[in-house]
Amino acid sequence: MFNDLTTPATLMATRRSGKPRDMAAPGPDDAQLARILAAATRVPDHGKLAPWRFLVVPPAARAVLGERMAGCLRAERPDAHEAELAAARDFALQAPTLVVVLFSPRESAKIPLWEQELSAGAACMALLVAAHAEGFVGGWLTTWAAYSDRVRDLFGHAPERIAGFMFLGSPGRELSERPRPDPEQVIGVWHP
Ligand SMILES: Cc1cc2nc3c(=O)[nH]c(=O)nc-3n(C[C@H](O)[C@H](O)[C@H](O)COP(=O)(O)O)c2cc1C
Image (tube, rainbow, N blue to C red; front, side, top):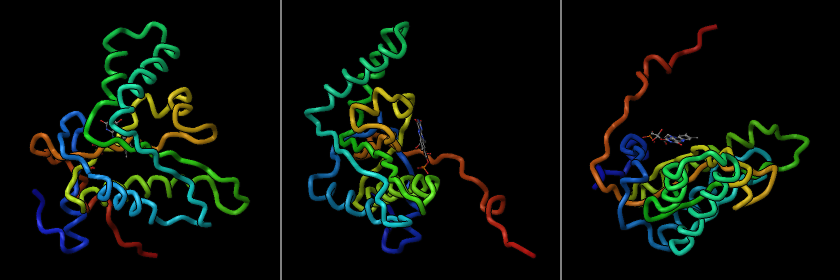
């Protein structure tokens, strides 16, 4: 499915996201998922605070999550249309595997919140790269749900927040490449 992944550069250059709604079985099995998640914990983390955690939503819990997310949307937006509520339900049913990454900021006199946020982003990215290395495709979504305190409360509690809904699986259709920034526009050399 993928190109030669024997070098780190190739691994990164061949990774791209898939659309979670297009993902198909198989997803990672338990051993593969454990390796992916262990890899995702190996990220730069100033102060060794581990300001993130990972919650796997097992297949049997997906429909319940969908119902709860629809309930959150209804509570927040009583005027939400039935189609929007259905989309909230369906969101949780996408792809074979769903991992919710929570940003869990730690009280620290020394480590700024910004650096803890950067570490949480790194954890999400590491998860995507590790999934690719295991032969799967990933997709990082936030949507309204990552900004909903009600949805956050399904998984954790303030001041935690949802860094990403990470969907994993196999591509159900050929992955399309998205426009990428021109390296020349974003890479430079600093001259004093
Ligand atoms: C923090 C974050 C949140 C995102 N949330 C969404 C989302 O809610 N919906 C969406 O369609 N794409 C979202 N994306 C973008 C997708 O992940 C997108 O497919 C990705 O940027 C593709 O780039 P890649 O192929 O290099 O992974 C998000 C990206 C990031 C970094």
